[in-house]
Length: 215
Image 1 (tube, rainbow, N blue to C red):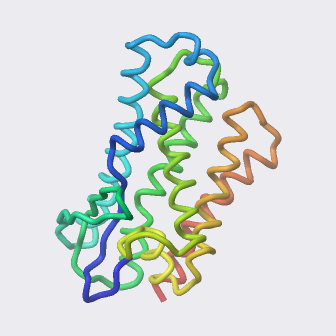
Image 2 (image 1 turned 120 degrees about the vertical axis):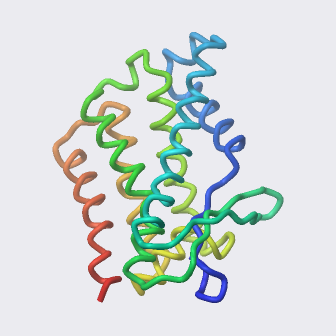
């Protein structure tokens, strides 16, 4: 998250780049989708990924309004790649934590619903849900990598979370990565209790940092 003089921002990559990645990964990792290769399934995969982006960004916008600030849009770049950021006026650390975390909370909640209601999602004929799930996982992996490297635009969500909670950014990267890894294991059929409840505990633990940010 940007320092006060640059306002706060919530970073999101361009939809096209994420969608392409989602489709490639799903075709490689999901036999039922890879074998079909139909235009309809591909369109549904892309639609699911687009839905994931919309949910992520709408969570930021909802958190902005709930915090009493009006969101705006700003163009930013990461090397040659275009990004956009949803911006807002400077707020207290507690509110900043919520705004910056909202997209991840949405992703984690959606993943939990998907894996609970569709425990056999990998084998189900649900390309929209697979696209949505893959978008969420890949986004978490991407943000975690940026957090570990402390790389990317200053507007990135992980930086905003780390600054508002006064912790190192790689710690935030680990908190985002852990449930994504465990949910990926669940997607591929690992249903040990420690995996399922470890995933849920990691999601709750990351959210509880808001207590530290609000002090």
